[in-house]
Amino acid sequence: MDIPPDVPDTGADLDALEEDIRDWWATQNEDWGAGDDDPIEDGGLWGGMPEIDSKAVARTASIWEDHLDLDFDPSLIQEGGYESIDELINDLIPRLADKAAQKAD
Amino acid sequence: MPVSPHPVVDCLRKLLPKATVKGGTFSSSLPDPRNLSPDERRTLIEKERDSAVSKVLRELLAPVGVDPPLNRNTGGHRKWPKGYTGSVTHKGTVVLAALARKHDVESLGIDVELDEGNDMELAHVMRNDESFPASGCAQNLISFSAKEAVYKAYYPITNQEIGFSDVRIISKSSSNSYWQGIAQCPESIQMEVSSIRRGDWVISAAQYFSRSQISRNMFD
Image (tube, rainbow over the protein chains, first blue to last red):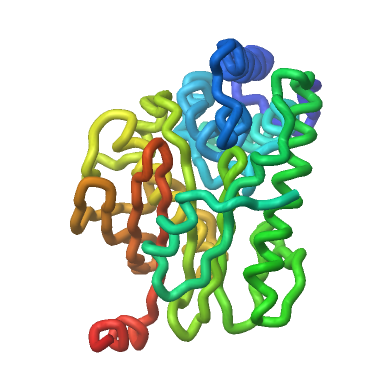
């Protein structure tokens, strides 16, 4: 992500934050569909396909909190989740960085 | 894209006796995802999910003479027909939608989640002054699902976003697979919230009743 110029400087390494979020997403997708006997009926594999829904994003709370030193606010998660990890990063990093900067003021 | 029956639909009907519930799974027509690239899988499931949600909403809204899509307000939330409250949720290939008359329930919210065995990271969702009829991941998942439903029911009546720590849930009763509680929210708003566990699925509903509705419900 190219950090937009209006994202406040929180003292945090936003590039490292982005990398950790991307690593988390890569881990979610690592073992999906790896087994030859993974069920496909009744939506088995499709049903278990990693999604960037509100639950998944809520599970990243500790990553945001570690980097930005704030309590993760789930109300900031876009309704309906995100279509891609890029969309999540481009939406949440500026907004949470802004919250962190406000907290520091 | 057909939407086939799924057990979670009946679970939600039990949680919302005053609402119309529609939904199901759109998995039957999907190909083996392992034959697709990650981008193809994601594009396909999003396209088919949108189509399934539209189909379910069409069934739900037909009796009230409204066609989807529904407009959304500035917060991105659906605007339900005048005199009605509703909610939509989906997980994987399962979509659910509920609609009720505001005469019967002022606002409702629904949520469906799948226990994927990885919900220890949701522990922060629970407040220290809460407890749920489970432990570990299962407790975290019920807490998360219940609060998601509360959030969806809360926004239409206040136009305010709230976080997990803003809602305190007090458990009232529970059995093997059914749990019921009261959600205490900001602005002194209280809601009834309940969940059913069906296999790996957790289905939750939150309902906000006005004072006159509460009185009426007492004598039903």
